[in-house]
Length: 242
Ligand code: G3P
Ligand code: MG
Image 1: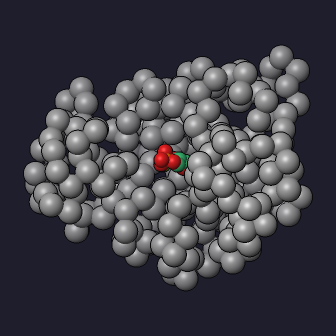
Image 2: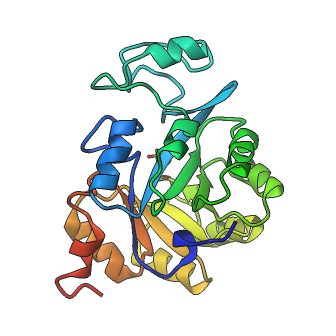
């Protein structure tokens, strides 16, 4: 599989959980809203519920559906019956991949445990899709890398402090193309440091245009947004933004 959107120099706006600020997150409606807003890439989170990968952020269904309980504690049929918002179901990764427009890239975040192997297996049948695999769980990401030496991957770092050197070390070990950071960690110095080592920096979650413009001029390579209708590539290309 060749690297396309994920390893180019273009500034990239990625629909976070689809368009989580417009429709219920990680649902097919949310992904549709992101495509309608013109994104070139979407991000989603996956958990493994044998024999499917479910597109859901949390390990429990409480926050995002009308049910309660953990993904582990419910069976697949029960999980698929839940209302994930506006009558939407929790989609499978297979469904999202099946409805992905040809020109939209996909960032699969390995959120749950034991997701690397089934994600790899699913993608073997979809080599035409432009995919980035990311995770906070570096061991899971290493497992994926051991299965696929070429797929673009990105370690994720959250709100707690991590030394820049450790971020780059992780990227080297994973042969990553990008390091994905929370806004809190994405200082101009850290962005400069990572870029100087040859890695892209994708920043989450940026819902304000002013912040997006600032990150772009600080040298970020792209961002994740819940509001791709507001934070869009055409808008960011205007007004003399570097
Ligand atoms: O991949 C960027 C972002 O999705 C990471 O954080 O918690 O929104 O999955 P979270
Ligand atoms: Mg995510």
